[in-house]
Image (tube, rainbow, N blue to C red; front, side, top):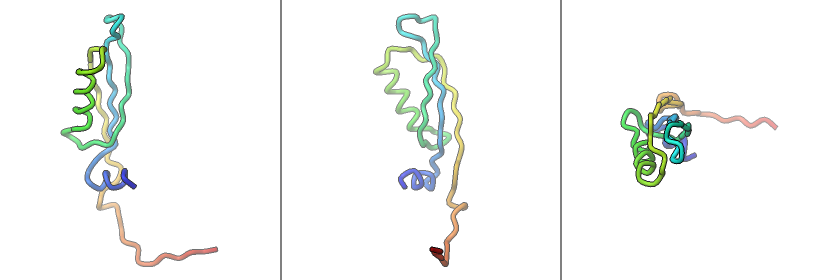
Length: 87
């Protein structure tokens, strides 16, 4: 239910592909996929995560690619007047 509430508050499912340098072998790149509900175009959750990465993770960031898709919005919901149960 919490995900539905976030989506109605204009949060979108956001995926980030993070390329980073391996700490022991800086010439090699590794991929990390991050996925969370976030608000486009500011992406505060992603910025918070990347800030954590820079402070706590040894692998230096190379690049970040973002994909974001709004799944539902308030316009997609309709009020149901009747409900029928069939046994």
